[in-house]
Amino acid sequence: MRVFLDYCMLNDAMRDASVLAKLRFMRKSGVELVTATSVIGEAVEVLADGPKEGHYVLMDLLHDLHLHYVHPRKDWLKDMARIDSFLDGKNATFVSASERTHMALAMSAAADMYITSRAEARNLSMLVGLKEILNVVDIDDAVAKVKAAGGA
Image (cartoon, rainbow, N blue to C red; front, side):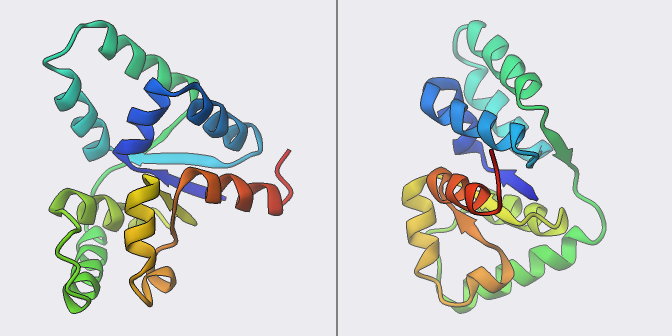
């Protein structure tokens, strides 16, 4: 199983031990955790103005979770056009350009799930048909799916 982590999951894992424990559980259950270079860039941008300890925490987190990194490739453009078309057709103006980019990168990485914040997952779950394109969930839903699939 391959799971894409959005920026908010990295941010939450740096600040909330229970989120980090859930991500560790998923990794130990054999889930491949992936994120995009643009997600890492977003994290670095947010941490750039803060204390240096934040940088170390991020690097430790990336190492601890054994994250795999997705880079934009040519086929990503098709996924970007597909998610844009879908979201525009649903008038989903609440989905930012960076979120759309991350969603398209998750699609190009063949992610089984896209984990984002509970509020964002709730908003996106209201878009009928999105699940057929990209399975957007929050961390608790992801853990439940891993357990249902036989995770430790």
